[in-house]
Amino acid sequence: QQQVKQSPQSLIVQKGGISIINCAYENTAFDYFPWYQQFPGKGPALLIAIRPDVSEKKEGRFTISFNKSAKQFSLHIMDSQPGDSATYFCAASRSSGTYKYIFGTGTRLKVLA
Amino acid sequence: NAGVTQTPKFQVLKTGQSMTLQCAQDMNHNSMYWYRQDPGMGLRLIYYSASEGTTDKGEVPNGYNVSRLNKREFSLRLESAAPSQTSVYFCAGFSSGRGTHEQFFGPGTRLTVL
Image (cartoon, rainbow over all chains, first blue to last red; front, side, top):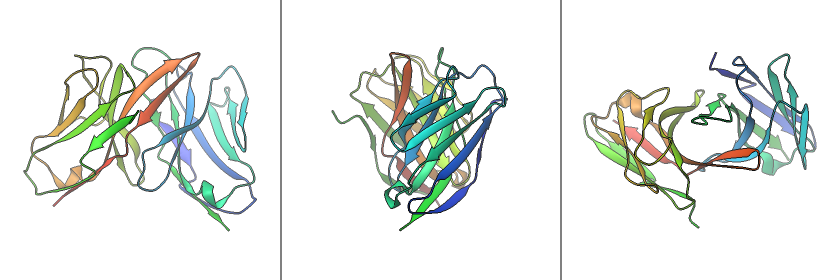
């Protein structure tokens, strides 16, 4: 019940294309769903996050779509650029207590120029 | 502000050796975390500290100990390193406010155990 399942493991997209990464969770107590971006040799950094009271959140070219009934959420990167090439992690947490994050296994995105 | 800093950046140990990974933050985080990152496994929580003076086990605590020395510093100790502990280790601090919260990660320590 604590797992967050992420797919695909790797993704190759042409420049200008749409990158889509999917995550699914089991624990209905989770109420905060962040996405982290990690470049090689660096620590992960928060990209965008959503709460389950909205179905979509957009920040620039990055959009989270959230389906509460299906317990799924996804990251869409519009007009993908070579600079977006990185590893992306979804996560889930409760907004109380210890705020422990449960991370997905990561998606390595490569955007071809 | 330096944010979350980790030392060393790289370390090679022999099986059975001990070492301490250091983490410090200047962002006034109450909570701090230690993760390990392995290919295909994502980020797995080793230990966390919800506040100064408290620590608790995460998902993969075996073979590790931690110390929350003060609010700024949270160290991770390997008493007797094993090849299975070869990994990249990340420390993170936590902040919340205005309906959002975020874990801020350090740059990582790449550890190889031979």
